[in-house]
Structure formats: C-alpha cells, structure tokens
Image 1: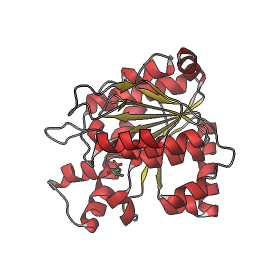
Image 2: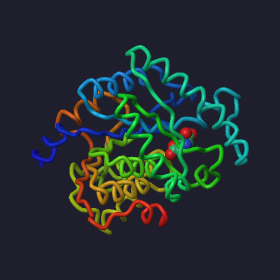
Image 3: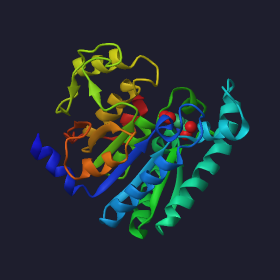
Length: 280
Ligand code: GLU
C-alpha cells in the first residue's frame, strides 16, 4: 500500500478531471473562482515539476446557464446552445488564470466518435503529444454542442479515462464531491467504510458503486467513476478518486500521501481503446 502510494511521486503524465459541482458554488451556481485559482496553480506546479498535465473540465452547461439565467434547461438543443456559450466563457476564465503563471493552454473538445474514427483518434493523439512537447496544458471537455448522446448520458469521468488511455498517461485523478469509494453510501449508512486502495475491480465492487451512487450527483456518480476506473486501470493508468473541495489533495496525491481511493493499474495487454469505447 505505502509502496503503491510512493510510486505516485514518479508519475510523469497526469490527467486531472474536475466536475461541474466542484467548480461552482452550490447556492448561486456561479464559478468558484477561488477554487479554480487553486486548481490552476496546482496544475502549473505539476508542470513546473516537469510533468505533462491534462485538465478535463466540465462546467460548460453550468456556466452557460449562469450567463443566460436559465434555471433548468429541458431541451437538448437548449443544453447544446448553453454549452456553446458556457464553454467559451469557461475557457476565458482558465486562460486568464493560467496566464497569471505564464502557462499556455489549449482547448480540445472531443466526442466518442472522434475516438472511434481511426484517423481522428490518431490526429487527436498527435495533437496532445505536440502540445506536451510545447509545454502546453490542454483543457478537454466533451464537444457537447454536437454530441446529443453525450449530453444525456455522457460524463466526463469516462471521457477523462479515455483521454488518459489515449495519451498513455500514468495517473488519472478524478476530483469529485466525495472523498473516494465507500462500501456503501456514507450519507445514508453511517457504517459505510472508506476504501483506500482497490487492487482489482470485481463484480462485488461494481455493485457497491451502484448501491452507493443512485443516479444523483450527491454521492459523486460512483457508477461512472468505477467504469472510468475499469478503463483506466486496464489501460495501465493508476487512478485516484479524491475530494475536489480542497486542491491541496492534488499535491498530497503526487507526494504519495494517503488521499482518496487509489485504483491500481493492471495493464491488460489486449487493451484496445477503440473496442473499449465502442462498448460504452
Ligand atoms: N460536458 C458537460 C459540461 O461541460 C458536463 C459533463 C459532466 O459533468 O460529466 O457541462
């Protein structure tokens, strides 16, 4: 256990995913700028340490809703329009904050179909490689404006695992609104136990996720996170689920401290991103 945590210090290519609920104030729905500032600083620090960094950020629709004063968009076209508005604003905020540290960023919007298409997938991978070579931090989101299905069922947990596999990252960090994986929903069951390390994603574990997440964001959508963990670990990427309420967690993870739930990679030599993505 301690050894597996120690190894996180040496990770060279890290994908970090942050969800809308961690980026916005619960009450007002506005961006939590103080938190985003801390996130950006942590990412720049990882770059300064010589690591390649990718940020997978949600928040396009949330920011679009705020901009247009829409409480709850119903129609897909409305959500897509809000995503188009919000994504640009979100990037503007990131660009400004990264500029404080003289860090160049890039926007990459992907859909599942880009990964399933052999030419697009190779192009995307080459673009990431080139950006890493240039020292840029890519900021990734789903291309919500064209991907109907992504808006309704998609989630950035899976997307971040796909990106981690695509760029052959060695660590994926999911910043969520929960500390990690519990044996049951900690909000409903006071006896729920925290799981620090997962060496194998078994059927029992997947069932645990289902019970503890339901379909609400309140418990962090554990089912999607476990699907992401399955993909990432199969692709040879260690994954940590940690609470995004405190950006210090990012430092703690890469310093080998016990933070969140660590899913250990067990590279499946037959792992094939195309087939994996096709199944979901
Ligand atoms: N892509 C969506 C957005 O940026 C969010 C998807 C998710 O949170 O998983 O608004």
